[in-house]
Amino acid sequence: MKPLCLAVVGFGRVGKVCADALLDSKDLVLAAVVRRLDSLAQSLPEAFRKIPVVSHVAQVQTVEGALLCVPMTQVLDAAHECLQHGIPIVESSVLHGEAFQAHRDEMHRLAIRHKVPAIVGAGWDPGALSLFRSLFALLAPEGYTETSHRVGVSLHHTAMARQIAGVKEALCTEQRATNGRRQRYVYVELEQGVGADRVIDAIRADPLFLNDETLVFPVESIAALEQEGRGVLLERRGAPGRLGHQQFLLEARFDESLLTAHMMLAAARALPQLKPGAHSLLDLQLSSLWGEQHKKAEGEWL
Image (cartoon, rainbow, N blue to C red; front, side, top):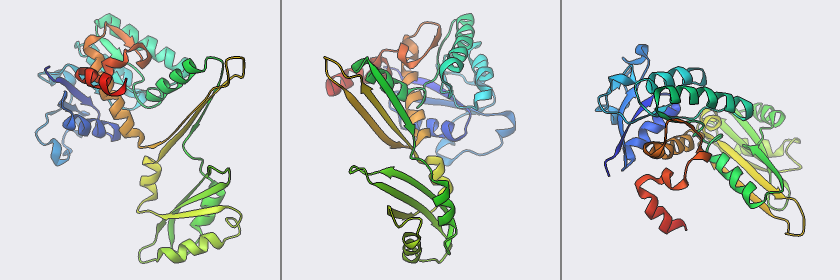
């Protein structure tokens, strides 16, 4: 099967990860990177030196879809530019509830007007996490779902850790161990030349941490940790009844940009099969997200 040629619109964090993933893909091709006119002069990493860089998706000779990796405020404009030139799009706007429905309706009007398919909310949340929520609800129709995003940051404990001599920056989180006991996770970025053991001992000896199990992890960059470190705890509890009491739990740690990119690429594989209009991931067949690999996936996962 001929690879699907895709353009990446926007080259921020998600855009770069999408472009990287396309370079590694066997059934999708990076056709071009679309950047703002004032960003065209900025050089791309060496891996992309042979990839065309343009200011408008219409300038790409062969493109069968576009991944919109621009800020939320620019998504509709970017979508309109693509759709009016007959280019299907995949986007990952972070919207929920009524806001998502209103966004999808507007995108649907654009897609229908130009007779082109569009996939909306194809990121992590909404997106992949929505599929997990939906599946859990199907398995336990009566009940409730709780979603906790990333491990909670303890501001008071973080502030204390920052005061330890030799600590340049710190981040403290907490979670429950399997035995129910509270654990403190303290991430510290050390000043140059400072030994980790002394800092670890000082933090554990502070009265604020004495009553909890405290794990201290030296890291190179707290800023990078805050950017990449994401987590979720998804729990579905079925209502007790004559059919039993079901409980499902999903716990994950991940790089949100990477998961968003993988979900966008998977959604792009479904574009050739879609009718004009806006579609969410719940509208798509799971097999379509695998593209030409769906037979292999069927044999492996069923």
